[in-house]
Length: 201
Length: 269
Image (tube, rainbow over all chains, first blue to last red; front, side, top):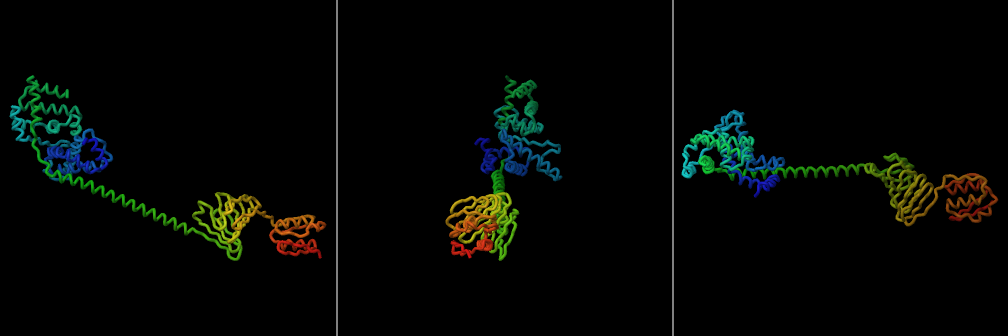
């Protein structure tokens, strides 16, 4: 069913509508949330809170332009808030990988070894290097890469989730690919063309 | 082209590889707890609404009981005993009640409608305002502001209007009385009449004229009254007491009366 139609039922508090959007997006939310927090427990709590908050505030919510981006953004806020609160209470939170600097957090982007093997055959690139290259990317670049290439989100949607403008998304992605390219030993000319490509996105 | 291919290559790689990820094992459980929360909240709201509805219903019943109770508490009955009794109604209208007369009204309803029930005989001096209604077993009398008298028994209703106008509604229809008009209703039909002043004065009036007036007032007939045209009368006759009137005449004019029903004959001694 279309998100616009489901949203109308969500606004009326229909629990079937909540089940529908949950079934449609909770897997992606879980994966993204896990990469942010590294803790199953925190993500589960956060997902639950996201849906309950939508239910509680449904009368004041307007139709989001992208429901997926809205849910992922809300999940991220939940997780960051949870981590901040834990830190305020000075609890030792091994679960929580959030950096002490406000707004900065770890983003764990490990590649699936099995798919790595298949991909390395297909692309004739030293893919063992790819993982270490990805690991060395700044967290925001990793997050942008993940959202763009795994979740297939548009620049606008990524901007919404990461709470930055569209322009910054493009430059972050461009920097990420640039970094990867460098790590994998690719010449500078290619990077320039890559940047050109991104600015024409 | 080499450059471009290489570039596209790395995007293709990123699209091709999968990132390691944990399975959302408790997906169903979390879903259920979200739905439980929603259902629970709905039930709570429903209960709250029922509670409010019940409270409102209880309050409504309490108000109805209170108003009804207040209404009954405000029911007022005034009954005169052996003497004439004067009372003042809530709107400052005066009522003079003859003995054995009773008036009923409700002080609460009076605020909205001037309405009372009468058994017996009473004279009303009504202050100006909304319609003032006297309900009796035989008919209803409505006025705006005036002075009038109502005398009701089980089979007879008499209304006399002294000032302004009075509307009398009976089984026989609606009649409007103006100053000095009178209405008699016997349960079947109405008869109009005239309200006489208490005294009527004559000066050097020939006796037949005076007797005609008495005939008119008391509904009697004097036999042979024109034979006494040579007698003149100066003085009063009273309109409320025929015996007294005849006494006055007989003393002044030196004649006697013989009353037989409504036939009166004149005797010269």
